[in-house]
Image 1: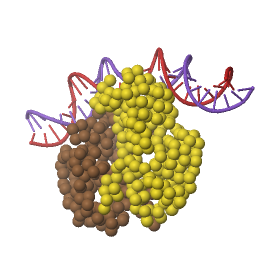
Image 2: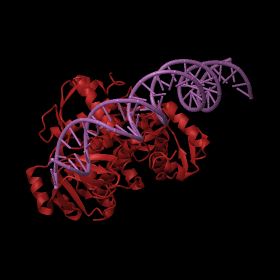
Image 3: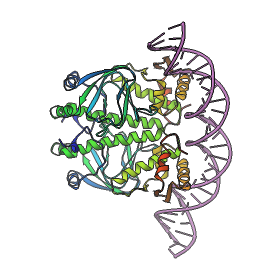
Image 4: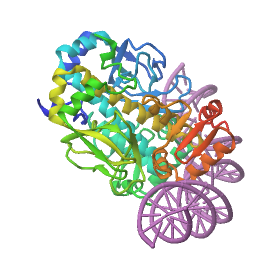
Length: 228
Length: 228
DNA sequence: CGTACCTTTGATAAGACTCAAGACTGGTGG
DNA sequence: CCACCAGTCTTGAGTCTTATCAAAGGTACG
């Protein structure tokens, strides 16, 4: 009926409304966690779904091997959504934070009477697909700085919906986490940060905060073959 | 109700039933196309959705630039599903084939009375996410042969649901298409094929058909750091 | 204040890309 | 049936970038 509810036009980042949050807190329980906490492990039964309220987390292929990071999760994201009966990925908190733990059965019941919530899930799934394709595109870039540039724009777009100001990129994750996400060594990440700063394209305020100074030249790094 | 219809456990490859095909042919029209045909272009309005019946196609970021291939489409796959109002990718036929062209409005009407069809779409979306994450994982492998090995297993899993026999990998796309998908140069693809064959891991029957001879050694190429 | 971890910096070497040329395939027309 | 031709594919040599190994510098935490 309304384009807002079409399952076929699902892209568009958004957050849960206060009403939806209230419903989720009714059917689930809020869980607070510390940085470094294992939120779930690969192979766990998918009886509950986590909905991130605050903080950041990383999704890994294995609990032990944190070298390969599949995705980052921020406020409004779900865990275990697209994963069959048992979870195929592990997740670990990158910062302190909080999440709703929602029984799958209760959530599906809620879907019957709350179509908007259901469509929110489908759209979230679409966003995840979009993010995965963006990461795949990032990974096809051979230049280390092209990958960093695309990573910055990805993080920026994620933070924009949470009220982050454009041009200010907050990096809650470690250099090693960034490296695991963009498929490079931590050393190469560090070097690229330094070069971008030395060229005046970004400013490293501190290890967790980067400002974009010259967006045109940042974009030129990944359009074409790597604008030098 | 039935686990088969859960939107929260959506993974699992499957094809449309004959009944569903009949419904789709009612609400849409079948289109036959030749190899090389432009199926849709980036920016086109998403008034209709294509559902692949036969053949193979490639999805590209731009109609002009076919170097970067986002995904391949085979029988049972949809085009333009996860893309907002206007299409964000282009698609081109890799082989001769056929597809249903379905008006979005008619499809959404059908969803109201056919929940199974709707769930089929959600699961397809999940599969696309899974494939995109698989490709991202593939692209994090630095070794050319590791990427080839993962590509073979991906194609094999896609063909298994269409009745392809395991160990026989049919490659309808060109070497350049493979290169564009796995983020390497066509030369590197060619070299890797040769090396895999010379080691007795696969057999190149001809340019379009590869047999897997030693699955263990093929898998060893991407588990760990290379298994050279 | 000390310690452990994260981050940065520095040399080396392996690997893929690029450019260039030769071989093959499939389709076309005589 | 055969010869031709354009496109695809394969092979080869050189260059560049990043991973790797190693160690010093910086931070956060107890």
